[in-house]
Image (cartoon, rainbow, N blue to C red; front, top):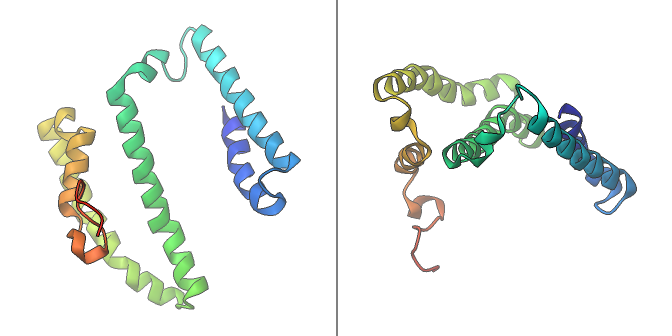
Length: 156
């Protein structure tokens, strides 16, 4: 499984270096696909697989995986890519980057214990993907402020 994930990640860098239709990219993507098929075959016959196959048929589990994947992508952007953007492209000093990002760290410090207590009080049902999505939408800026439009409204 690790070989497949590593090959898939390496292929993204190889696309930039060699091009999308190159032999190294095809080889890495092929290795990733073969590795995924081998993991699937192993998990079906293993006595205690890493992820039980029944979970892949559970819609709630798949929804949570999707939400967590998007949340981790956003967190990666905030923790890794924003400081690189500020220092490399904007020429901001590292100390200034820390000062800019410090309020977001404070927000995480304040909200993480509250989120944990909320899950303890409400249980997993109060923390379901639809509930999390509705909370994040409620906390987002109004549609007119960011150039976004409301869901279902016709384009301008």
